[in-house]
Image 1 (tube, rainbow, N blue to C red):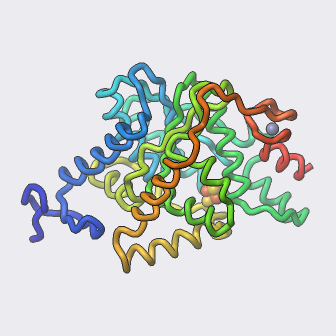
Image 2 (image 1 turned 90 degrees about the vertical axis):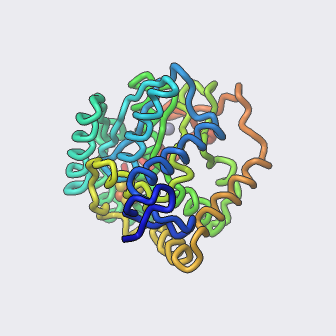
Image 3 (image 1 turned 60 degrees about the vertical axis):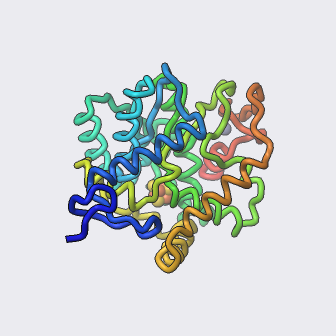
Length: 308
Ligand code: SF4
Ligand code: ZN
């Protein structure tokens, strides 16, 4: 029997980067400690906040909702889970059942919005039009733009003061690397653990409480705490540049444990040196949809226009 490095009970998992074998209880404690660290360092939530939590039925957002369910009781904020249905047949309809189960288990009411209702198209229909018309965009690029917009609108609908998303340390390290590989230096300015300011009228401030937790740890947290989650992969994910970067980082992490955290920490150090967003700054609005946008026409409207 391998014993837990903290309490000597039987260990159920190993974290190579920290050289730790842990039992379920000590692992849960470590996972929640990392979320508490993010809360302390980035001042994510305040007493009285109404927090919309973007969930999908997948492991990251299941872990997020549960850990915030516990943290909310300590800090004094309320949770409003929201789910965006992209309209991907055989995928999102399945994972939605797991999201509903989790909300029921926690006694929370789930609000669902869809691309169809908010953008006039499902993801499946957008992909069909793209292929028929030979449009050059990638599935996840489009989906990412629509999801951000839909989550923001859903967060406003439920009266949220913050929007929590399930991006973990892997996601952040991937985004950092992708920005480098694309030569997108401005991407560093836009991207962060906290996006937007509380003064922006149409944009609900977006926070990433799982920034210090690896993807693998989110899955383990769900298993150890008996949280329902869906394990299938989106049929469009094979097109993603992110997938290639993810494979690369996983390979490096296997050979050099701790590499993902090193990318993350380097990014946070660089970010600290960049100018902070001005609290009263109001970005412009899109002349087509009236939503928050730094360009005259937002990316969502440019993309939707190309489908006509
Ligand atoms: Fe959307 Fe891409 Fe995620 Fe599928 S993998 S849900 S297309 S972002
Ligand atoms: Zn627009």
